[in-house]
Image 1 (cartoon, rainbow, N blue to C red):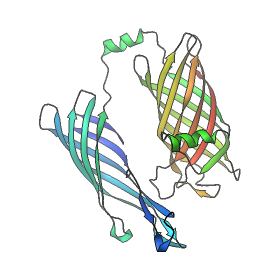
Image 2 (image 1 turned 90 degrees about the horizontal axis):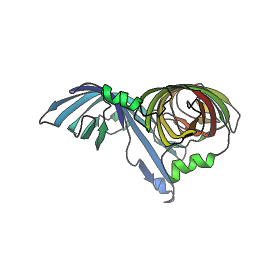
Image 3 (image 1 turned 45 degrees about the horizontal axis):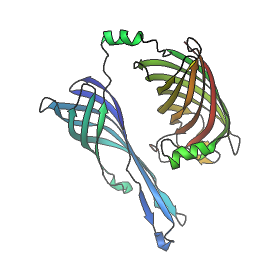
Image 4 (image 1 turned 30 degrees about the vertical axis):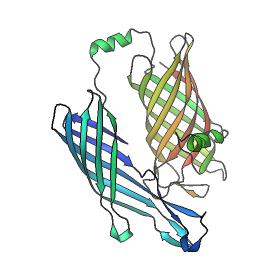
Length: 326
């Protein structure tokens, strides 16, 4: 997945995150039973410039190059390292084709190459991809004015106070294993409070809104009752699914919000570095004539996405919030 900024039709800057569809797995090490296995997680991140040239009315070829980061989490067998942890940076290059379906939607496919490193027995990585890319474009002013006259309210500012309850871990587990649309975690939060501010930056006529947010949270772990705090900025995708006269009901999803976490060892588990990412999803409501009253429930998660070799992940169960919007 990637996120970037298009300077013009021919040049863009982008950041991407890549991982294998399935991690490498080792079985039967030194004659161990067949049911015993070990995963080696390898993940890649990049920051690149992408240049493209037209070869038709809608068809483009592109090349990209820049900075790549590889992170590998190994394992031990019999107390000795079998595959070591590894973390290194390198140049990254790639290329492919784009086909513009509309001004906003494109079909894209290509390959990305990251060199290996012989000193740590890490082979080169070749990533093949295909899919869709959506580019946000400015909406014509007449359409903006028409959307404003529909009567649907999208609050411009939202302030929230939330409390994490320490109950509902089964929900986290369900959406991270049974229906894999979210993430779990090994370090569990027993309780916490947080303050959030969100500002709308884009919305459609009725359903979708994109907000930018910032938050500060204070938490206590479940096992050793260790305290830590987080500071985050994040994007928020909000989908208003039901609009009724007294209230509007929405689903919210946020991922990859850059975060500072005050402790990296929680309940004896290594979560990586002080830099990590925040993710959360949940449901909420805006109520009242001007949709000024806000309440919601969500689950939270912190992890570094395996961009570092250690990534225990932090799991926060049911979190309840109240807020004011205007």
